[in-house]
Image 1 (tube, one colour):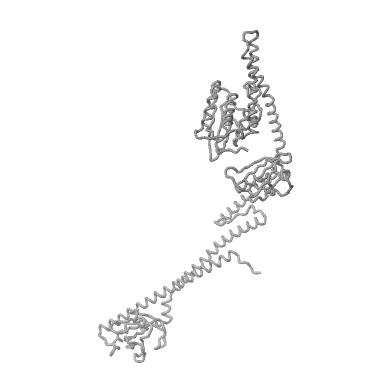
Image 2 (spheres, rainbow, N blue to C red; image 1 turned 120 degrees about the vertical axis):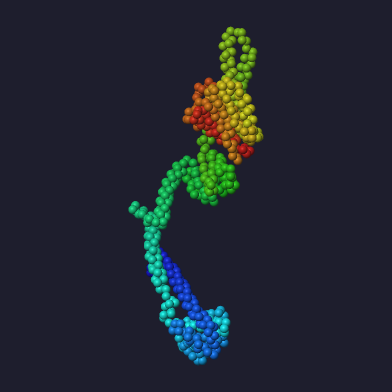
Length: 588
């Protein structure tokens, strides 16, 4: 089996090759530069000697064609190693200090002569055809019709002069060795950090814990590795917490009395508790163990349409479904990633209780309406015809007046019950139109001005003129009248009553109604909107009231597809928060 080369070894090999190639390139370049500079220096020396000889020839009028030997006198001033040759422009050798000119052939084709013809001067290192000795030749052309060529034997001495530069090579090699050592040092540190990181990776892969004493190297890679470990540990901790919370949520789902199921974007089941399957099989005609089959059943068509339309205004849709004598509340919630949650609640008992209470209330109202109207008419007639001068007239009149007052309360009670019945059973009978809330609240302020003055209360409206709600003017008037009368009756004297539209967005108005009165105990807040619920029986008897005012308020708000909650103000008094949609509402 072939042994795997370590990362450290690969780094050392790669960088060694790079440094070696770089060093070799520097050495070759520097040596070539050095050699060229030495050669040019030697050529300049030979050129100076040639110019001296040419000047000597011209000053002494030497005839090179007939008596070239006169230049021998000049040779005493030159090195004995220098070969001196005079060549005519036709290539004939006129003089050579080492060989006889007549024995030498035509030199016009010699490389150095050819260069001097083209460039005025030229040099070449080659083996002489005359004496088989390697020379460094230098030739220069003169206007007097000749070339002067000087040559030096290209022996060890000259080669050493030209190529000497070994000290530079030594420095470069030392530099190369130093780079290798530095590279080894840093590669060892880098390799150590990577080894530690790999050890951490293997421990995490095998599920082993890192030793407490484990510390990364004190360098950049070590810092990055430590950050990775810290983030990994944080991720693991978050995973554990998430798993714990997930387990809690699943237990909650399993123990919940509601049927809960979670589906992916493509309607694939992610989770469903046992109650969901139980309720689903009560609703569907054919029992199933596959919750996703509900999307093919016509009963759930509205929910499928809601999912397909992806409404932007609301991510929730709910509907009541009746099946086999049972009532179910089905609700769907769409999340941001387009997965969704489906709830099914069995509300049969609650619905029966609600219907029973509603039926009883309606029956009472129906049975009482005729006799109460009759009694009220009789009492009103008696009071109008009564003789105030008879015996015990004042006492009898007082009893009659109290009886008449009670019939008025009963009439108002029956009216309130009728209002609730109409909202719940015949909502389409309420005419809908755009209602300017500033004008409606101004009208309400005038209608209740006398009641407000009786208790020195003030009513403030902070609603802009452009706030318009599309709905039933009758019900909107009833909402705020009941709230104001509730504050007048139970809030106390010298209080402030305020209605304010404190915010709005593209689809909704946000209202608040509050008073600065006494408020109620927290335990009563959750039941305030129930029918006939009274915070204080005695207080209600003293102030009058049917116990249906706030129930009408809530049902009227729900009629407009809005919402309402009640709470106590920290400064004192009751605080109601309401929402109303801006767009026209659809009454089923």
